[in-house]
Length: 176
Length: 176
DNA sequence: GCACGTTGATTGCGCATGCAACTGCTATCT
DNA sequence: AGATAGCAGTTGCATGCGCAATCAACGTGC
Image 1 (tube, helix red, strand yellow):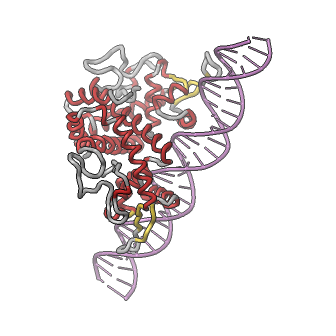
Image 2 (tube, protein in one colour):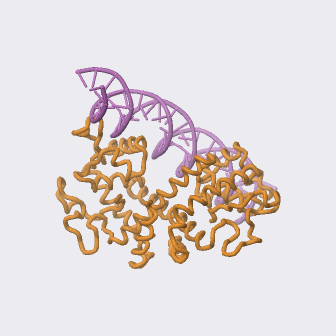
Image 3 (cartoon, chains in turn cyan, green, purple, brown):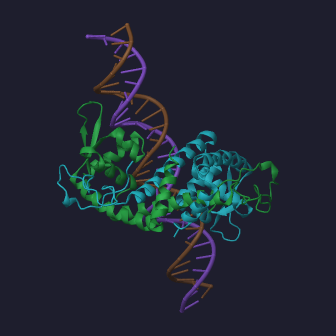
């Protein structure tokens, strides 16, 4: 699957038979299609490919085994880890990577299912806190077993400890 | 952001103050929260984090500059690279990672915008082919410049050529 | 040649999400 | 203190997607 573009100018090619930076004229070190060198292309496409595949399968496992979406799971997990197992909506939105409106609806559903509860924020009357319930914790424990096993099998087990270490260091460079 | 679960048994902790595999009792080499060793946790969370951040920003750039979603872009790109710049719906669905129904609607929109056209498949009357139009190619050229620049800046430029090479090799191991 | 299972694509429906507008509360400035 | 700007959260609305049902065409067995 080739998901990286050809940055060539369209005017350079004939409109009927040509291709953008076609394979018939590969410049040195590039594959002639993407404008990327082979290792660049491999790394970037591998990155996209691996993420898509792994997360899709993890999501399916989680849903089949526990009727939980990834966002449900990450929400419960973030709450479980928070001090007193509660978090304000605003602070919950960031780790779960949802907008506030999206989070409102998600929290609504989790509350309806009894996995979390909503409380008024004591020191700020505008705020709402979400807190994970015992039922939510139980489900989280079960779901995390499923999830972790999947992560191990599809990702962690494919690397040596040394590789994981350098990988972690490299990936942490991307976050800025 | 900690998005990896604690696989401990809920019964082990007190319901009010305890935590799942709490930080106060870290087992050797683990962080006490995730059931993962530090390098495992760093690699996996870094992977998720990096992907989420990068793709979100790329998507926003693409949308702001060209009114194109990632799926729009990948679809145009897949068509541009296909022989005769056309592909059957079925064959287009896989690289774009959509279900056929999702692809039907996406192709509908792209056709409405004049970026692709739909043709009956000559050798199979059930089939439909999508072909990128010249307007679509022009937009793709512009969009790919935006996209590639973003990929370089946020991903490729952060690695040395040697790192990219090993990274590509490592990531390719994940696809099975 | 005709019935029947299979395949390619579309459609109806439901759901999760983002954006923008809105409400109610807080904080600041005079 | 009162006006005003800013923030937290929710709601209306639109959109994009998956699932399951559907339809048309292909292919196989008889």
